[in-house]
Amino acid sequence: MVVSVLEEMRIRSLGVIDDAVVELSPGFTAVTGETGAGKTMVVTSLGLLLGGRADPALVRIGARSAVVEGRVTVAPTTPAALRAEEAGAELDDGALLISRTVSAEGRSRAHLGGRSVPVGLLGELADDLVAVHGQTDQQGLLRPARQRQALDRYAGDAVAVPLAKYAAAHKRLRAVATELEELTTRARERSQEADLLRFGLDEVAAAEPQPGEDTELAAEAERLGHAEALASAASAAHAALAGNPEDPEGVDGTTLVAGAHRALDAVRSHDPELSALADRLGEIGILMADVAGELASYADGLDADPLRLAAVEERRAALNHLTRKYGEDIAGVLAWAEESAARLAELDGDDDRIGELTAERDALRSELGGLAQELTDARTASAKRFADAVTAELGELAMPHARVSVQIRQTELPATADAADGIEVGGRTVAYGPHGADEVELLLAPHPGAPPRPIAKGASGGELSRVMLAVEVVFAGSDPVPTYLFDEVDAGVGGKAAVEVGRRLARLARSAQVVVVTHLPQVAAFADRQLLVEKTNDGSVTRSGVTVLEGEERVRELSRMLAGQEDSETARAHAEELLETARTGR
Image 1: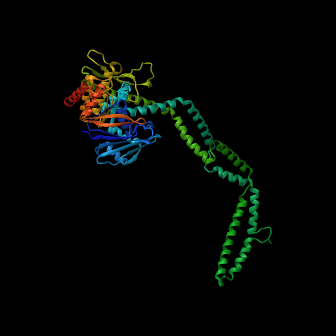
Image 2: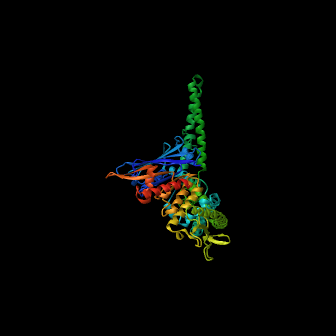
Image 3: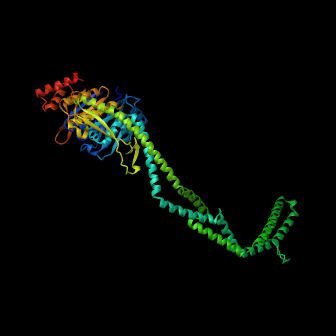
């Protein structure tokens, strides 16, 4: 059951195309016309709708922009519909409206369900809406790497699950190998760094600096350097407050304050305000007595000790030596020492780390070997089914005796090779990569008795086209994408084979929407709907339009495709015969 259908595309000013509407049916639609026109109309426009690169050359000369709009019927529970709703798009009567605008300056805008969206979002939806198969894919499938991807895609979860585990282990192995190489190749540099750190830490440990010690020593040095002046000032201040025993007639501050307090205290009962002042004078007297006592103690305890001053300056010099090399102050030196100790422990643990990494690397290689064997087994099992499916399709495409097989092999490394270059699979050391150790290649035996050969060498042009079409059809049959666009994949095919190609695509259209850009009348005749792309030229501007062909018009177009003459009776008879064959021979 088809869960989404590309209903139509509206195209304005796309190259030579101006204001064209491409209406597509749920079944099999064939697009025909002059060479290149159909391809430009359908493939390029659809590519823009699916997030393809915007080329300002697509804009017709004189136009400000090219616009492509598409209408896709989608079931509300499909991944495309759910992703669109996440982006804020709204369905219009069960349909998703997609538009893409390309300006003549090259700027591009995309809209989905009435919302402006990033172009990349259209690319995400493309994976769930339309699968495009073209001649470029055919050439790509000639490469072994692409053939491995094709087999893995066909195999589904049977390969995808172990491949995901293998990829994760392979990624970790590369990370471990990189770190291990860094540790071993930079061993000398790291050893030199460790020696420098160890020397610095030894210097700090020998000095044994204490937090805040540099500040305390600076204050002590300042005090010891001015001890005589400090003692003289303290003694003078004490004499001013408490009096000088050697001068009995002298007046001191404590005595004066005490006299003032006695004078007020005698009359304080007569006025509360004066009583408060008397209390304050009493407090001042007590404070002055305390200060005087502390000044006496300070002066007695201050000793201008040259030996202590020398020791302090020597200690400060040792600390300054550390701060010049390891920090702005002792706090910075202690922070450096803590960080350096951690770094030294890390560097000193390199040997242990190398051992750990070596063991992990070996374990990962062993794990990869087991996962690679799982991949080989899964691919081998899927390869038989894949080859049988493609061979069956070739039977439908007028190659009943052709046989396709899939060769899976590994490259065994010589005994002299570096062990890091391989993993052990099946008792052999083989080369490996991010996708396993397998090399996959499609082989074709076109007729009985012919040895299987790589498809690039064992097939003629027409045979290669049919093999590739068979592969694409096999993919389409197992692919959840509901719409398939085949872009001239029938090139090089003609005659009876072309009829079989058309018949096979018509059968595929029973379960999916199929759009085919073709120049073969044998293929177009099997379509449920045929679209004709025609160019017109008014002498200054070339335009292309799209016409749905029915009845007599379709017969005339098939006649033109057959013989180049719309009015040839022979060609018309052949065209009618093709249409009848298509109607009765599906």
